[in-house]
Picture 1 (tube, rainbow, N blue to C red):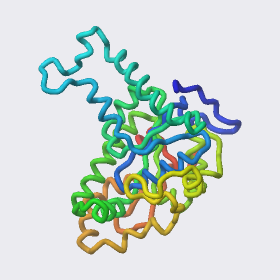
Picture 2: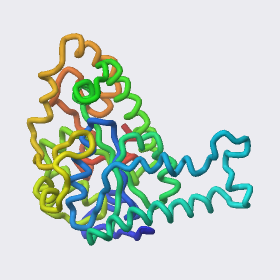
Picture 3: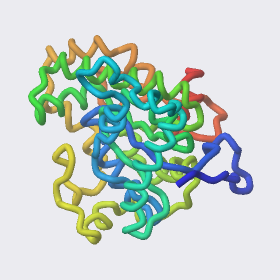
Picture 4: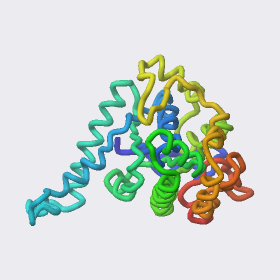
Amino acid sequence: MNGRNVVPAAGESADRRPPLVGPLFVVGSMRSGSTMLRLILDSHPEIAISPETGFMGALLATKTIPNWKNGKDWYRRLDWTDEEFDDRLREFYAGMFERYAAAQGKRRWGEKTPFHTAHMATMARVFPSAVFVGIVRHPGAVAASLRKSFHYTFPDALSYWAATNLDMLRAATDLGPRFMACRYEDLVIEPEQVLRELFSCLGESWSPQVLEHHRVQQDKGTPRVVDGHTITRDPVDAKRAANWTQAVTDADYAALQSTAALAGFFGYDVADAIARQPLLPPGSNRAWVPTGDDLARR
């Protein structure tokens, strides 16, 4: 899909939508709710978001032949420029995802892999019409979940949260309107408001199906358990925003202070699971979904 120009609806500010509608990449740290967001977006009748593929690892590996002095940028020996090689890589990988979407009768494709936060700049170059949706979650929630699911220590999990979200934030400010963010807590507490704004920013019509992703995914035969041990039959539940507090200790809360500055940037209070400050200033025509430009101005 090469992208198409988007004309804002009547009465809608042009900055609400990215300039192109193309591939949609979901990014965010592990345990941030990225799989839930993928399932929600995939429930839209026009969008197919694949399960995790990690395809950027393969794409980047294609550019280098290991254990050979001439292996870096080997294609230049055949008089291929970086731009020409990126074009060919885009054709190949986009073709795979386009077939995945077309098999479901959908016109727009996307992908979600958490470690792709480190590759957003390359993805934006190879797929120049792509847009990115980043999801962020309270650092305590992510750390508690990583400890439970993947046996991280709490401090190591907090370091991972900070590194991943800094990667995402740096890329987001360069991407400007091609990047949109949402907070997990906003999404589970006010799902319709957040999703209406997000789909408008993505240039997509509203579909109530996205509020019933658990039913949509069951009807299409999605496995009950998918990436990250996510249960696809579970609806969005506001109680999940604070569930993590039952699994943290006083020592964990003390460790959370190491993330206070970055958490505060995203509107979080490290000592409170629910309290959130607005990410957008008063008078903004959006309430829930900041773009990369909005984040750069914070």
